[in-house]
Amino acid sequence: KAEIPKALSSLKAEGKTFQLVLVIETLNYFGDLEPVFLSIADILAGPGSVLIITLEHFIADHVTDSYRSRTTGRFEHTAEYVKRTAQAAGLSILACEQASLRKDGNMLVVALTRFESAGSRTRRTDVGMGDVTRSHR
Image: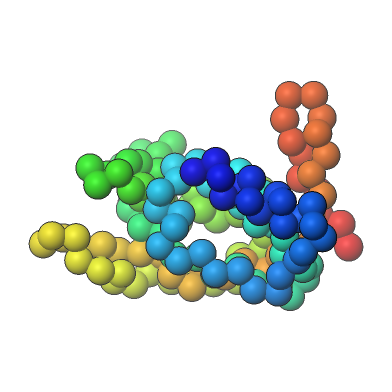
């Protein structure tokens, strides 16, 4: 899991940016999406760039629920958590749709699809104990 943000950081170090990033059937293996979204925001080429992801979705029983692990080892995320985490990374949400992704045994897996985020260039500045993400134009 830690390898994806590391790989994205190496792309940024090489000066590579992208107009379109597709992350399909991958983020289900991450609970905390913050490091992934921060890394993706760093390689988006700026305003007009698009990130499209799919995630397994669940409706939280409690307001504080953000994601949970399934018995399969994959994670399910709430739409609210994904939106909040993407926005904290400097990504603007354009659309979020629910659709049937696949069947897992006899269960239908509901996914967030076409979750498009228009990227703005972001710069992370290390400050003390954490990172601060700032959008700049």
